[in-house]
Amino acid sequence: MLAPMESNVALSHKLILPTDRAERLHYIKHHFPLAKGMTLSEAWVGGRLSAIKQLNQIDGLAYNRNRNFLNGAVTHLSPYLRHGCITLKEALDSVQARFGNNAEKLIFELAWRDYWRQVWYMQGNKILSDMEASKVLLGVKPVPDFVKKSQTGLPCMDAFIHDLIDDGYVHNHARMWFAAYVLHWLKVDWRAAADWYESYLLDGDQSSNHLSWQWIATTNSSKPYYFNKENLGRFTGEKYCTGCTAKCPFDKSYEDLQLQLFDTHHQAVANVYPISAPPRQALSGLSTIAIFVHDEMLSPAHPLMQQPFPKIFVFDNILHGHWSINRLQFMADCLSEISEIEVWMGETRQVLQERGVGQVITQNTPNPALKALLQPYSPKWQAEEAFVNLKFDEKSLKRFSKYWEKVGPVLLGDKEYRKP
Ligand SMILES: Cc1cc2nc3c(=O)[nH]c(=O)nc-3n(C[C@H](O)[C@H](O)[C@H](O)COP(=O)(O)OP(=O)(O)OC[C@H]3O[C@@H](n4cnc5c(N)ncnc54)[C@H](O)[C@@H]3O)c2cc1C
Image (cartoon, rainbow, N blue to C red; front, top):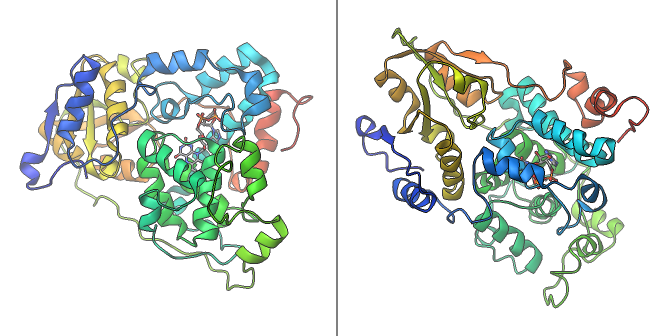
């Protein structure tokens, strides 16, 4: 929760973000006393300036070679892409201009982000329930306290939880190991795990996050993802295994683990999970037109920021109430780069009503919660910059391999394109 919700009337108010960064971080912490987690670390300065700096530091060739290693040359672009500080197309253009197809793996990974997003556009809230029946028996346990407190007794998993809670950033391979451990060893319900995990990520994104958890669970893939000690040891440089005294649950062959972990003789049904949505409301009927700045378009270079209408952003419990303090601080960094923007905390509808808004213009989003929230304000959804100019049907979004069959040749050229 962002703030104590004592009375709706007193809830919404304007924030004046300090220009000094240290003061700004403190200001956000003060205004969101109930937000969990740690203050934003020095390594993560939000905003477009930092995003471009980060983009210019990418080594696309090293990425090709070693991205799966924990100390590999990964880009750390995800929080910037998630909040729209730079667009996915900008990242692609920059990578292609500097490395061409030598950065094939990075182009491929950027495409994963677009793929999950296209699935979200097509399936909406269905991504929060089983996309398909699971192929193995899944657990239904809540996330255990010993996981939330990073007290699993396994140095590797505890370190990955620390990365999540202290920093908000976890390497992709560590996300995969951790999710497999939680789902297949601990038998935690995938949706509970995905919700909890997303709430701590600086790059938390329902499509990339929840669909990845489903991919590991098998509700969005044909076989489960799992790993063994040898694999984890290799890609971590034995960092956690050396000196580890725990009884390692991963120290087995893949064949033995498969027998231990997976029951494939189960009744396959796709579960539907409950989803809450803001109630429908009559159209506002007021006259002001405003640019509604949402959490996927936090950039001063966004075309809508140049429009002659008031620009309004709201930290809203419905959208951001479960996010960690460092993420709110990251967003405040981003917002501080946008001139003449009104930043509010409270209820979006109450703010828009108070500001006399009858219509909002904003960037399109696959996020159904945001769409429902803005429904009374006759939203004009402006298309976001496309990663690739192609149209997708349900069949081409069924699996990444299908999507890549269409997208790969366009991005890499017919000659260099290889099937994943
Ligand atoms: C369980 C789990 C949860 C995840 N949750 C999120 C999430 O909430 N938000 C999020 O942005 N990503 C998520 N990912 C995908 C991926 O782990 C992160 O995008 C990546 O680790 C971010 O670090 P980076 O920017 O250094 O990545 P790099 O390896 O440098 O990749 C560059 C960019 O490509 C995109 N990308 C790379 N790998 C993937 C992938 N597998 N799926 C989607 N996009 C990818 C990201 O935008 C990333 O910034 C999740 C993966 C798993 C397994």
